[in-house]
Image (tube, rainbow, N blue to C red):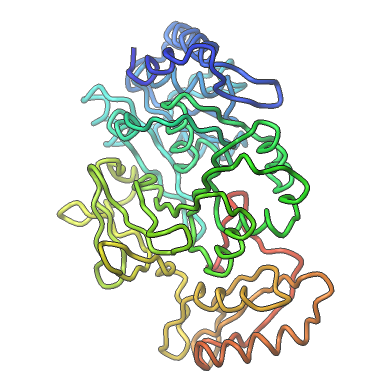
Length: 444
């Protein structure tokens, strides 16, 4: 058996997962995994088979995933079950099998070519993983991983974590959370409703002590009032990442959760979630690295070299430098003792008459103003300056919008400079952050 499945056997009847259907233990997860191994093998699924696994994570799909790992397949997970999306993923990954209905329905596929990276995984006899990027600024790319190598980073760790899964298992952050918790014998709750109030209710019900979320989701947790309606005193650690954390928001979170340790994480689809260390609970400085991972800043852009990185893209040129570094596209500045601060994304930079503006820098100022509940800053085309700074603001209840607009322009001018002052301010009921709770600052 694969070392990962063997480790799960050790935890026996300990709680492994919880969903609407109830709580299941590690013993049932392993039993279902072995059942699927027999089922898939008898259907003809063998080593190197590219298999699309469709549907939300739960006992069935988790066991199906582990069974495919046992069989040394190339796994293409997809939370979405839309036929056109599954067809596209199958076509681009060389899909040979489709699993639906929590792994119970097995359907052979045909007519798909086999990408070169998949062939190399077959030659090595290794299990593989294909994840598609979000595609917010273009066509999603298919990142291919050596799953045996990627799993090695989970061999360590001791404390059993209890958490709720906000990301699906077709997202690198979701997979990182799942495997990190399962190798430690912890509990993962699979929510059917990801609203802040529902998540807070699950934290209270299952006495969860760990939460991994984006700053946008954590802000929604505060704004919704869910913290007051539910007992969240069980929380011990909150990891945040996926986008820069506004300093004003971190301050409010620490005040709301004084006994919680806040830690900033970093990762991309291409590198996976990396080991990080925050300089302090109230600091936005972090250090990235550890065994098998290095980071550096080149021309203001963070680069990563890690053993857990992908092999490459299935249909696109390799993004790695000749010496193996991955340019993340994240802007960063160096601090002392190897700490850095992530300031934004290269693609999000606003060019106002040749002057560069970081959206997160402007957002941080706006979010610290009275009457502002949430805000997002982005660039809009301008015939004279090329681009202009625009922002959408969610006002606090009963706030005076005219006063907020005046305060934004005056404060940004005083603290940031005239070219960083938003020329267009729009008041909205909510910020579009998608199902991954991440602000979309690039408008296409």
